[in-house]
Length: 313
Image (cartoon, rainbow, N blue to C red; front, side, top):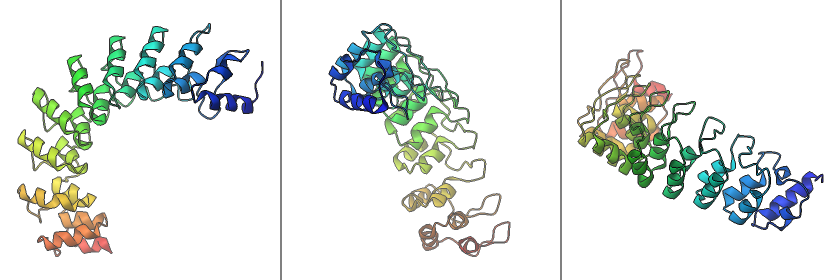
């Protein structure tokens, strides 16, 4: 039986509501039911949407095509994991789905599940042999993704199952960097309480977790890191300290806090830049005015002979 794209689109639309009648009326394998733009089959859609009866019906075919892929090389298991459908994850695995299948950019189903908050999905995948410490092409692991996702229960579970908290991405970003940038206080605390990490570990740009907390605008995490011994005055590879980062980003709300840590508002770096220069270079006009009110010296020249206002011009 040959179907036109219009007929396929109509059946897919009906199937989105969980109606398997249009599919069961087919006289050909369901794998022909796919969207041209994404390559998603009806199995991908049903797995994503949680239509368990549809998934059961599709997997009753021989062959079941449980690991069919779309244009991003995602399988139905990737979809079910990403959209927190634990019953369907289990069903697909029971039917032989590859637990460590790789989609584009080398993401496993577990990695997608770790970006969400459904612990049950993560548990099912790990119990079925999912690799917690697998590194994708950029060096990210489930630990980085759980740190970014922010679910403390998932992160604790992965730690208990042997997740490597000291692993780094290819650009040197630690799990601590990721958690600090994204403001996940609970996960930062878990990492610090483990006592196995250098709180001042640097990425390839020379940033520490404290730099990342400032960039993410997370004052509570800044305080937590400092309480645990973070170096307040360290500079990154472009010789920027916390004050310079905050002014460059225009974070007026952080400046008073940072100055209270002991920073001189007119401190200069190796290029002769002050915080005022940094604000001006990034066209942060409100920040520029605020720093002057806080006592910034607008007459200081950098190593290029420019005062901060020259950059605003």
